[in-house]
Image (cartoon, helix red, strand yellow):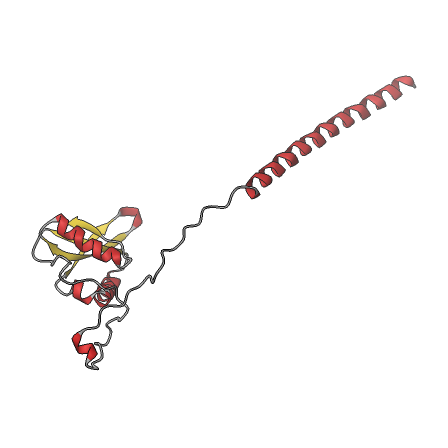
Length: 175
């Protein structure tokens, strides 16, 4: 009988030892997870960037005709950014353009061009629409909306600076 008793005791001790290892492993995992949560929630808050004081949009200066009680043309936005027409380089017949957008729809190109012209009519008055089709393989076909034409990259870059003042991306590029 004592042999049976020893076998049972031995089996019980084996199960107890295995259970103890499982409980120990669970405790280690729980502590590691708790440490991770503690570290995540005790991290310092990211720095906040304060906005510059003053308005973020500037109304264009009133024109002589607007003072006389005339209404602006329909479709022309009155909330455009004020840009001095003399300060912007005038597009001509050069070899450079200012890329304004890249769209996946050819139909959206004309709508985008109209929006640009409405936002800054003086800036875009001499500019011509230039569309470049770009096949990007698996990413699809894009249509680059570009304003042209500038005789130097510097002139295209100056034009882009005025576009960026409006909050729009712009890249000077060769034609």
